[in-house]
Length: 261
Ligand code: ADP
Image 1 (cartoon, rainbow, N blue to C red):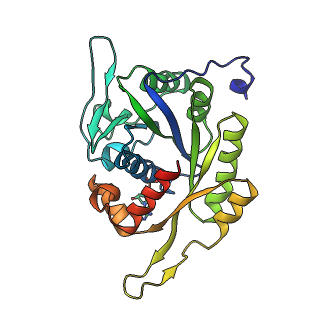
Image 2: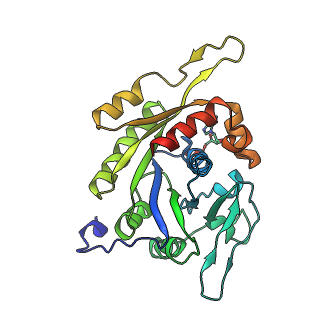
């Protein structure tokens, strides 16, 4: 509340970046990072110059998901961080600055905000059509800092059809609305499972609940991603499904979402 009361916010544009799109969620573990990574890759496949910033400072997953674990970034003589490049994406994560992947980030709010603004503004991003931001889950410091300081095109919300996930996603949606960031739509992750033998669809976490939520909030569903072992495997191996199996149904779903964004 203290932050919300501050009188004026200067929302800065990230130099050279046309559109900044945040990917958020209410809860952790719904596949937000998986979606952010694959969406960024899909945008890049469609020809957009794309970057991916891992703003999930306390739990960075991008280094693992892009197969960049253990890699480090450097600062040039103008004191700008040079992002890494993988699969045609420019990318930056706190993970590229920590001494080891087991090092916890135990910063308080002000440190965190400083790091985050540096991650956006003191980076040699070059010319990008889209910079995708993988936010931490929930409605905390990071989301507020970014909302107040950065000129964003919009936010995408990831949820699963579980009631526990949807309860928190309502809060996240309200937060974006409150801080004036347009919500571009919802991505339903782990929407169903297709039995490989019978081809039958099983709606493991429930059917129709995300649509109900989207309608209640006047939001568009940008796409539905099934539960697919190849998605999880790709993330763990550092070879995301859009890159590993671009013709798969899941990869095509991400491409479809990228066309809508
Ligand atoms: P979050 O960023 O919301 O915490 P992650 O993207 O880290 O979630 O995903 C949590 C776990 O679920 C990871 O192990 C990931 O590989 C897996 N996962 C995400 N989406 C899917 C999916 N559609 N099918 C199968 N596994 C998935």
